[in-house]
Image (cartoon, rainbow, N blue to C red; front, side, top):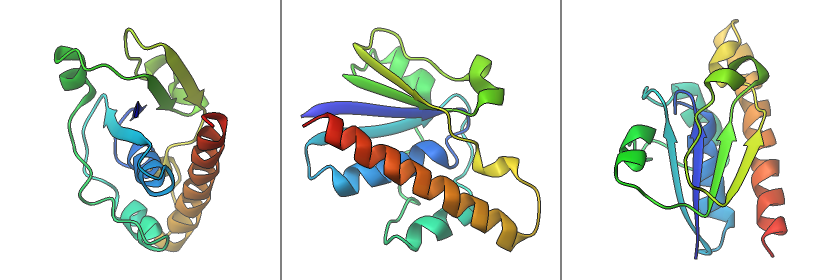
Length: 140
C-alpha cells in the first residue's frame, strides 16, 4: 500500500479535500494523510462543497505537519498544494522519495459573498479532484 501525505499551509481546505478524494477513488490502495504548517478548522464552505460530492471532511485528522516530522513518519509520496504566492512558505517534508507540487490557490484567498466564495471553492475542489484522479492513473 502506498503511503501518501498531502500538505498545505493551513490544512483548512486543499489538503483535506485531496485526502478525501484519494480515499474515495484510491480503492484502498493508498494509506492517505493530510497536514499543514498551521492548523485551522476546516472552512465550513469547504465542508459544504465536499458534501455535494458525498464526502465528509469534518472528521479528517488535524495532526500538524511538525508532529509527522517529529515522529519520523515515512511517506512514499508527499504532495504539496500551495498557490504561487505561498510557494516560499509551502511546507516541505524531509526524506521522501517522491514529491509533487500542485499549484492550487487557497480557498480562503477570495473575498466576496458567501455564494461567490462557495463557487470559487467548488472550482478548487474540482481541480483537486482532477489532480487526484491523474495521480491515481499515474500509479497504475
